[in-house]
Length: 261
Image: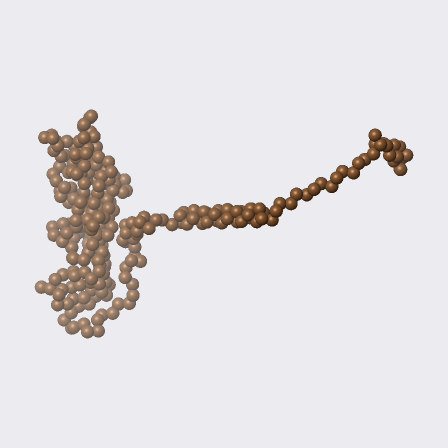
């Protein structure tokens, strides 16, 4: 083994061989460019995904938003037509014009159908040769449970359950026997009518026949009620469940309130 003399100490020791300079590996520039492109693409995907998640958290689908608008904004004051009102310049002396009208009444009867706790408002009301008409009208009143129950048939009763459901209790005849049916559900507006399709139906004391009798009884506990006798043009827009009945809001434009005598 070669020996070299240490100049500082004079001692000999094993010779130190110079280690070769390590070779630094450099990646070709094309793979690095590809990696950079993939990283940018991944970052873009993350940003787009985060934006989509944020958008879905602060928005609702169109059909849900439309439904919510039709049911929750019927009493929204912002829907009342705005703007200055002035009587027609050519209003005859024998005709009457009213700018804004509001009314309240404990009860109202139209076509033998009563409404309770009535609130009404109208805009741009004028009398003419065809009768009294209004540019816009809103009417809110309660349809008593008793009225709808009598319409469904004898031995029927309705009552509120919680804040948003109604219960139907009815004695019906099935297979030659009288049975007690109980149904619950929420109310909605369908084609201008008050409608309740039960979400839960049970037959009291049915035992093992409960499933069969329940299917037969469903059509007897549905609610479909149309508010009649009100001026043409007023359309049911919203309904909720009150203490003693269904709270209904009707609204319309260009409503003929009364015909000419």
